[in-house]
Length: 425
Image 1 (cartoon, helix red, strand yellow):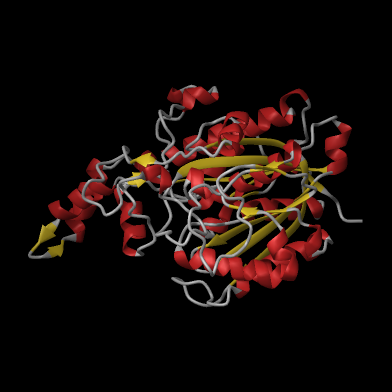
Image 2 (cartoon, rainbow, N blue to C red; image 1 turned 30 degrees about the vertical axis):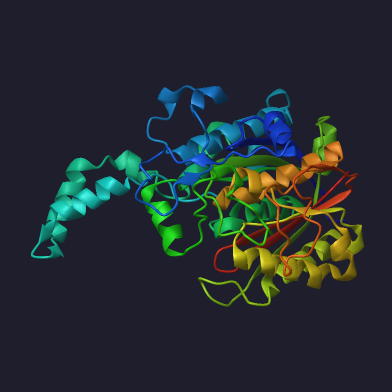
């Protein structure tokens, strides 16, 4: 028999707060974490709104800030979320074999001092070209190598491994917005295969900076509804005009079922299905038929051994972009057939914004809480139906719903697709 994987701990840092119960309460109340951008001067950009983590201080997570002098926001978020999840799992009072404990993250790039790099280029110009020797000399004299090292995506997993003495496999997946969902799925596979007993899985991201916003602006992916920040993210609504960039982190402790039972752990639910695909189409567009998304859902259902009619709720990727929402709706209908219209489907990105690589694990935790409490969060700002988006999106108000199984979708820019099935144990 295949080893079963359960969730025994959860933690997150989000634009709506940094503890599980507070954020869950605010999500179910339909509150928005979107506001005007304060992390940098955004007045010159078409988009001046974002979903920031407010008043952040790693001391709130119980850590001495002096221990982490060079960490960027995304790594600090991840340490806080990971610490929450580990405490929640009760690992401290039940020591585990650290050689059979690993880390799998989907965390994005770290520190990026965009203005400093631009100034270095400007100071290195010679006859309209960059003098590379001068640039190198200036960079070596002005940049802190410890801070620059934190740009590397693997560094966050490295820090967590050291913090928790994880001596098993340590990896980081960078598959855009599917990354942390993929990290959870791959971590579950390591447990199923017998390589480990416990994995800390999750992801983090913070791209609310000139470089990050410039990139998404050039892609015309961001909402420009600047006059009304809290209503800007409106997944599946006819008048959606792009996503709202968010930041944060999430983490779950995944554990082999009998290992968790042996130590008397609290179990949120089972990660019973995992599907991962690529559109194999374009790096800037998803496939026009949503074929990768539909296939990832079908694979997850098959892996979980369930029929489409056995899914009670779908936690949608639901970015609030014209293309994603239309094609996700199409893929859901292709996968679920006539049952698609009967399954409540909502997007918390209407409230949190889009947390990029962190979004998948955040929505995995939401799925677990929906099962636990028998309530599904709404898609807020849903005002005008779109003929191409014709499912039940739980508009504006949370809904009581007994959930036995939830499907959670995460689709990355460029056609990376991950679907997870989370089940009541």
